[in-house]
Length: 541
Image (cartoon, rainbow, N blue to C red; front, side, top):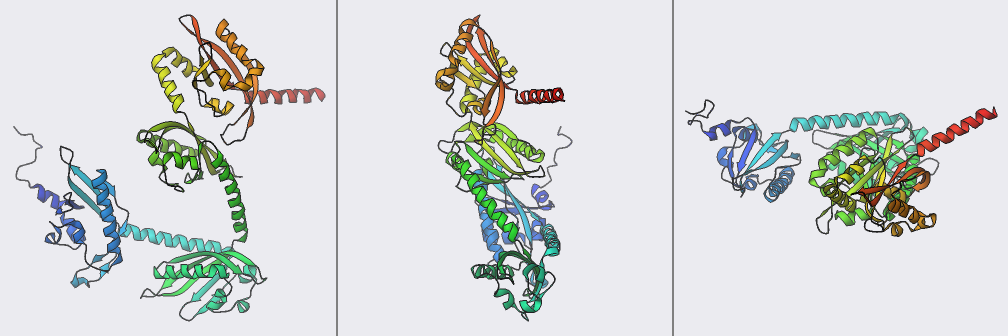
């Protein structure tokens, strides 16, 4: 007996597809249109016979409308992406104007669309169809445009509190200067002049051509607002850096007829900006000479800068700061973005181990990434700085230890501090935790003897201490050892104190190695100092 929810044999799937409420189109891999929904035909003023069994690129009308050529190019790129990568692709929001039927005037009606292409596979894995889903988002886009316009008006009104208000009649060449002219630029309206020349003649000659070109482009494109930064001659003979914002008004023929705006003196902020740029140049030079891959990001987490080591390793285009997640291992990328977002929201240090692709051979290596927020006077992060430390060898060593020696795995898991594992009578380093790099820098640790790794400690009897632990099985502790550490991997050393413990590791009753652990006790030492200072002060009283 057939199941009760089985589809009756008289149901035609073509009819079901045609009746779907969405704007759907099905095409073959050669881009031949096989079928469309009725909703699609109605929305685009088409008939089924106009497009079915035709190549989708051939369905674009032969017209000079600029929106159509852009849409065609984006469509080709999207379909090419689906066929090459065998995965869905969503096109950018496109403006594609619809030619209205002759009875409706025959003109073009402005529309905006959101379109996704999805491959449909056969059982053998070949692409059988491409499904196009389209949404008309014209209303949404227009609402967003209204919001942006309102925001521009609000920004203009706010800035006008300490700015020069102006209004220019393009048809009559009449320029009216409002409040703030004397206070900001030092002129009276009569001294300034009442035509366009009054502005043209005072714009710095080196900035004039660029400003005129910017204004011309804005009006030619029908932009509602225009913004420019340039130097303007003040009444005292000096040039001020100004920010000029204007709202452009058009007539029914889309001709610019009047502009309303305000000019703000931003000379102080411009000077501060130049000083900041010089500081940033010095800072970036510091990042370039670091032996690690390094980066900076803005307060919201947007990437600003990567040093040369990053570009050499990842193969990203020099100067490119977006798309960095593409070189992260696919299995790690989601967690990286999640942890990074949480760090930005909380304003806390970002630290994570994950894999990054090497452009030379396509392999992935493990790195420890640390990002530190740099806060302003209000305590909020204004900039992020981070570095990558290659920990591939440490990762491999740890994995080998975990597979071969469960006892050592437990020791490492329970250890509360930075760890270093030395094996054999020659004290050969087999494992170090990333924190050891803070103490002694980026040396070659794995596979080298303690004498080779720390030659500067030999005069302090370091080798004798290791021999004592290894040969006699003694546990040795050194309390409150003072060290200079590069805590944030930025080249700046800070004073810190550690408790060191040298502990023999036993296997079958014999000493096989030494586990060195270091626990930072800087806060404890500083607290003891403060307590001693307080006690002395009380005794003096």
